Amino acid sequence: KNIVILISGAGSNMAAIAEAAQRQDWASQFGARIGAVISNRPDAPGLQWAWQHGIATAVVDHRTFDSREAFDAALADAVDAHQPTLVVLAGFMRVLTAPFVARFAGRMLNIHPSLLPAFPGLHTHQRAIEAGCRFAGASVHWVTEALDGGPIVDQVVVPIFDDDTAPSLAARVQTQEHVLYPRAISRVLPALTVPAWAEAKDEAA
Ligand code: GRF
Image 1 (tube, protein in one colour):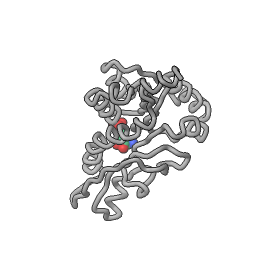
Image 2 (cartoon, rainbow, N blue to C red):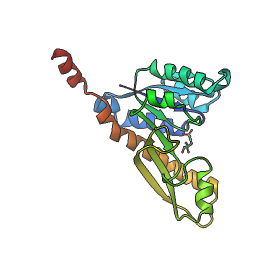
Image 3 (cartoon, rainbow, N blue to C red):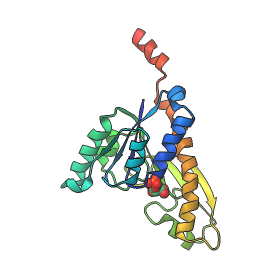
Image 4 (tube, rainbow, N blue to C red):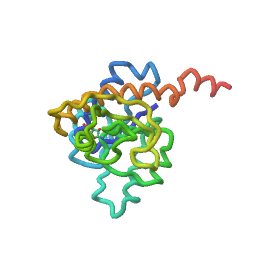
């Protein structure tokens, strides 16, 4: 059962997930492994981390397509090439079209750096500070056609300090994202992965 992770940049969330998969032995627990890391940016530093950790990588460069739809179709094919049980958007900075979302409905997660439904979209930390919020955080949710709007799987909360800036708050939130995302994935995997023995039974039946 393959988990395919999509990134656009540093991939620190991807790395945290890959390390949890190894440390918590998701292969034995869920029959799940990180099948591939795919980026829309050829220069995404996360690709190097994945490659160095023996994880298959691929690039679908959005700049080489003349439409959003054409890019999404190529990306979907690259994802499907790894037979994904779960697609994980981890710092993936593209808005996906409805056909792409529909193709992976019910098995695609995203992480958003706010306590959804508060602050969908960009610049979430600056907006939370300016609103006078006492807490910020991150949310893992199922991806639907509503940007940052799908059912929430899990969240983490961090305090906002009086002297916080967007960067200082972002750093505190991101540390917790690296706890949240692996926890959220390990919560949904059992419902998505059929244990090998069950598969064998089905085939025998
Ligand atoms: C994370 O802070 C996440 O909340 C947001 O983009 C950032 C990506 O970080 N979606 P990384 O690429 O996982 O390091």
